[in-house]
Image 1: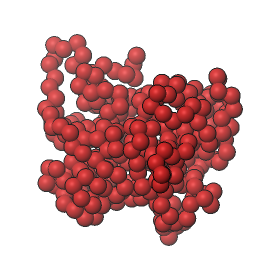
Image 2: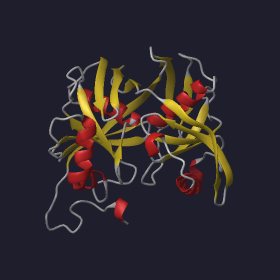
Image 3: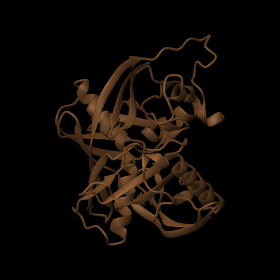
Amino acid sequence: MRVIDSHTEGEPTRVVIEGGPPLGNGPLAERRLRFQREFDSFRSFAVNEPRGYDALVGALLCEPVDKTCAAGVIYFNNVGYLGMCGHGTIGLAVTLAHLGRIGPGLHRFETPVGIVGVELRGRNEVTIENVASYRHLADVSVDVAGLGRITGDVAWGGNWFFLAKTTPHALEMANVGALTRAAEAVGKALADAGITGSDGAPVDHIEFFGPAAGPDGNSRNFVLCPGGAYDRSPCGTGTSAKVACLAAGGKLKPGERWVQESIVGSRFEAHYRVDGLGNVIPSLTGRAYVVSEATLLRDANDPFADGLRSDRG
């Protein structure tokens, strides 16, 4: 399997450019389902130890159904599959430019949850226009073991998020362990209370917010992703969900700039427009850097040939 690794504002992406599973040419949502049902060993092989690690997000390069798109992509991580991935899309754009497959300017990428706009603004800077995002539930409160009552919004930004109004610990790297445990407890409380996204979808990303550290930042966040790893970037789909909640609450106007910091201090600059159907369409800008190219090898005699399965204990 040939892969190219990058990071977007600190968060890693591994693009699979050769040697992925044979998924056919149907809609990407169907191909993602086939990936999950029939070829999940490819996912674990690509991103889990000993070839990867829990924070690594995979991006399987696919032929798009919509021929106006420069690429199709299916995102996955250490335990499963993602609808969209903002940092991964920025990383994919820079990777495709590195390969000479796209140049500066406007492009479209197809994902299982819709088409996203991509502007390659330079060698490393990319703006993406995400799928329509929205606040699903406002001011939801749950009792969380060890934390008390936590209130936040449930929103869609390409994945499902619970966006807490406050943080149980200061958003500093020294508190990553405590923040991770707190976010896991919030996720369990939401599941126990039956709080979901639309159609019963699990809320599998938890976000805490606090004051920005930078002089022109609006907010700092900590995002726990499914699989137990925290997002080193400000999280593209999470920032989209945040923008949607701000828009729904009348706290951010169309076109108004929002600077979201991550727990490591990196930033996305975001804004949104409203389309003809009244949907919030977020855009965000970040930077990605290619860090390696590799060929991943599989030895049939290796007891961990398909990776250490984080999802199976």
